[in-house]
Image (cartoon, rainbow, N blue to C red):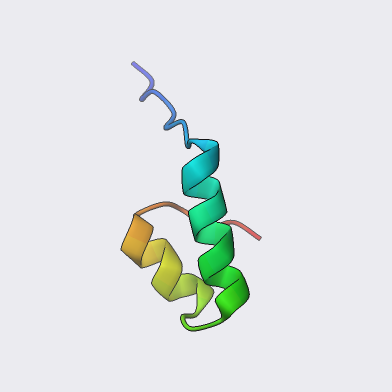
Length: 40
């Protein structure tokens, strides 16, 4: 069986985007904090 894909809310996406724009953390740190996979 396939694992069901996670669905991210627009509020979550906005929160992560704001953290990335602030540049307080690296992309790897943001990914680890929110537990999702980053692909270029």
